[in-house]
Image (cartoon, rainbow, N blue to C red; front, top):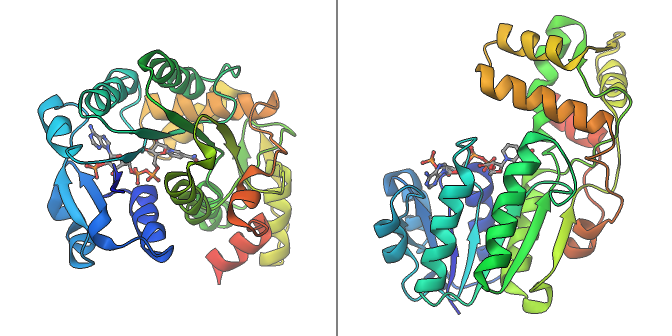
Length: 285
Ligand SMILES: NC(=O)c1ccc[n+]([C@@H]2O[C@H](COP(=O)([O-])OP(=O)(O)OC[C@H]3O[C@@H](n4cnc5c(N)ncnc54)[C@H](OP(=O)(O)O)[C@@H]3O)[C@@H](O)[C@H]2O)c1
């Protein structure tokens, strides 16, 4: 069996390749792809086959899937372009005889109304229409989305957002990568849609409370209307489109669209997932 992981130059793809190896997959059975293979030279050093694959270049995709049995399509980050790009990967997988495709989607992408979910829904629909055997991993928000902002929040003295009291089931990228590796390796999950998130549901207020506890200072959560929050993000240097998408996602959290208590990830991993407090303490240590 040969396994291919796209987006291996990114955080999740690289962690998934490593998780495949950690689970005993021989390196010669693993293909890692990136737009620029020099970015994954570290994986080649581990014995993994590296190939170029650009979602915007169908010829590169056709060559990349040669001999591949099971493929993880890590969703790209070109917001607004992704359905077309991912369809190109699906088409290449069908034409190349790939047996199964695993796709990284977003929470409740079939029913949720936030912009990011709507785009992932487009890929899920393309997959369903392709007839290709597939698994959908609806990855919840990375805990790193919060821990990466912890130092800034402590500097500013507050957490800002537009998520109200809504709950998120965040999980670490490493846990979601391990889940992706498990779904690639075990055909028991073929045909399934898995909502993958952390066991713990937390709000932005909970995040501020953890920061207060860890720092010994009172760090409040300041809830803003989504448009105002987008402006705060732009002021902090986030590009406009991305800022609007993030504020839109926060509004979705407020509506409960990122909450999921299925615990499918901890079942996949065979252990409880990392809590927000553990992740924040580790990030600030
Ligand atoms: N759940 C969450 O909280 C969350 C947060 C952010 C993003 N996401 C989604 O999850 C995905 C994986 O997360 P991540 O942390 O690994 O993101 P990341 O580190 O930004 O990695 C994104 C990967 O996508 C690749 N990519 C982008 N456009 C491509 C194209 N045209 N052709 C081939 N590869 C392309 C990038 O390749 P290059 O190195 O060549 O740029 C990179 O390897 C993201 O791309 C995004 O769709 C989820």
